[in-house]
Amino acid sequence: MIHAYKYLISIVFFLTCLSSAAFSFDGPLQINNLYPIFLHADQPYLEKADMENSMSFSLSHSSTYTVEESRDWVISLDMEITELSFRYKRIIKNLIEFDLDVPVLVFSEGFMDGFLEDYHDAFGFPDYGRKDRPNNDFLYEVRRDGKLIIRGQSGTRLGDIRLAVKKPLMSAADYKLSIKGDLELPVSSAKKGYSNGSIDAGISLLFDKSISGSTMTYWNLGAVFPGDVKGHENLDLRNYINGGVALETELSKNLDLVIQLHGQSDIYPDTEISAVDGRAFFIAFGGRYYSNGRNYELSLTEDLNTSGSPDFIINFTYKHLL
View 1 (cartoon, rainbow, N blue to C red):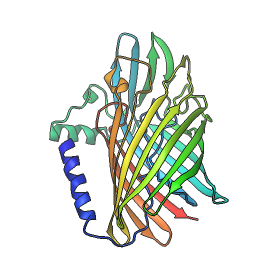
View 2 (cartoon, helix red, strand yellow):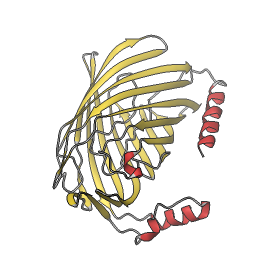
View 3 (tube, rainbow, N blue to C red):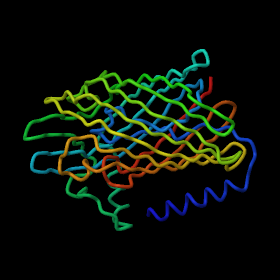
View 4 (cartoon, rainbow, N blue to C red):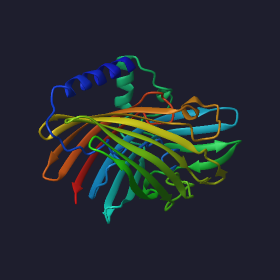
C-alpha cells in the first residue's frame, strides 16, 4: 500500500509540471490526530507559514479500536469520535497572526463496526481483534498497575481550547518562513477523557516553498510539551516532536488537490503495547473547492503504522476569508 502512495505522489508531481497558471494557495488540510488518549495532548495540525484573516468550521469523524493489555497496562479503546472545531485567525497590525481553536467532542459507540468488519474481510486486512467485541459498543478505559486513570464516557463536551500566535521570520517570492507558539487550556473532564486537565504548550517552524505557479509545498516541524493527565490517577506524558509535509496543486480553476504526510513521536510512557508505544504516521488525501473567498475541503486520513492514530479520519472543512 505504501508503494501505491508513492506512485500517486509521483503522478501528482508530474501533473503539476503541466500548468504554470497563477493560483491562490490555502495550505494543508485542517486535520489533527483524534486518537482518544492523545487528542488532548495539544495535537497539532499542519498549516501554512503565510498569515491570513479567516474563520472556519471543521467536522471530523474517526474510528479507533485498541483493546490490549501488558504486564502493567490495560488500554481499552473501542469508540468513534466526532469533532466539530471552530477556528479563527486574525492578523494584528501586519506583524503577527492570532489563532483561536475551540473544539466540541462527541464520544460515541458509533455505527461503523459492521462496515469495517466487512471491509477487513473483503481485502484480507487484520481487524486487530475487533470481532472479539460486540459491534458498536462503547469502551474507553485506561489502567496502570491496576489503578484506574481514565474511564471515558460517551457524550458531547468541549475539548481543550487552543490559543496561538504566528510570527513571520523571512519571506521571498517563492518561500515564507514563520514561527508559531501555542497554549492549550483545559476546560473539560480528564477523568472522562475529554481533556488532560493541564496546560499544554507547543512551538513549531512553518515553511512554505512554491514549486511552480500551480503547486506549493508546506513543511512543518515542531515540539509539544504536554501537561500531566489529571485523571483518577495522575499520568506523566512525554514531550514529543512532530512534523509533516503537504503538497497542494491546482487541478482546475476552482479545484485543487492536497496530499500530506504527518508523523509524531510517542507520547505515553512505555506500555509494552505496540498500538500505543510506536510512532504515529498518517497520510491524508483531500480536495478543496474555491468560490468567492470561501473554500470547501473534503479529505480522508489513514494510519500508516497502526500505532497512535485512529483507523481513519473523514474531514469536512468550510472556511471564509475575512
